[in-house]
Length: 334
Image 1 (cartoon, rainbow, N blue to C red):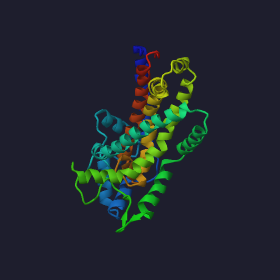
Image 2 (image 1 turned 135 degrees about the vertical axis):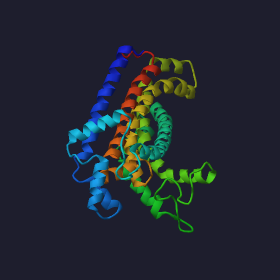
Image 3 (image 1 turned 180 degrees about the vertical axis):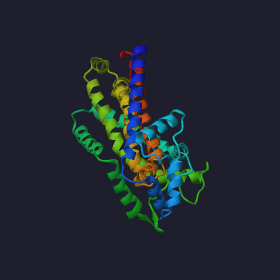
Image 4 (image 1 turned 90 degrees about the horizontal axis):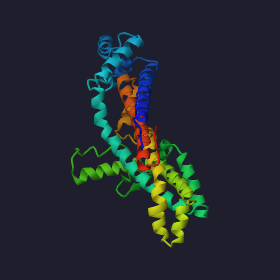
């Protein structure tokens, strides 16, 4: 049961957390030394016309170096739903840049999370039921090792092996090195384009799944071990109920509750990992855009993407609290 008092507390906590995150997101890019206008002109045009510098500084609101003034202007625009113009992609707005690249990140994250959670629940349920066996010990050890491996390291290894070293007859690489689809295709709902999208996303998705699903499996395994000690399972075994049904309908159904919460909480962690994977595979999601935003000192775009990450984590935590109480009516949140 969820009380109104608890909801008010959680909403207040989320608002305070969001404000603190906004302040930090604003300050962090701006303490990096350098002039974003000069950096962008050198990156895109390889020269620095003085007149253009002054014009762009005025357009970007950088003519006043006072951070307090810039923060007041930023908050005022933010309350009106305006994230400003992107320096690097000028004259596109930050919202336009994020919306054009966010679907690719959502596709990558959504697919990887669904596959990871399903695999984690199935494998964790199986090894948890056989706790103490040689197979369970070996698999749990391997999974603990996989969860400690950084996303980017696995991505680099996969890219080197399956994207560079393995070459099919005709000089075709097993997997592409960059992009979300073939450059010779236009986005459309046909078999050729969908096949190209799946082919380009295969390695990034496999990388994310390989690092994230062991965490779900270990959580499921731990809860299954605890369920094995419950009296209702001993009663089910004594009644002669088939083991398959006990695992699926009795122990597994109760053990999945903490895993459901873990999946929601882990979403923020997967978001951060997906950004590294996108950079490695040059996948055009917002993680890939964030890399260029940081290196080109694109303050508004960096702020906008960090806000997406921050709000994703805050909302995920809020949903996780409510979801657990919804799935288990015995829990009362005050």
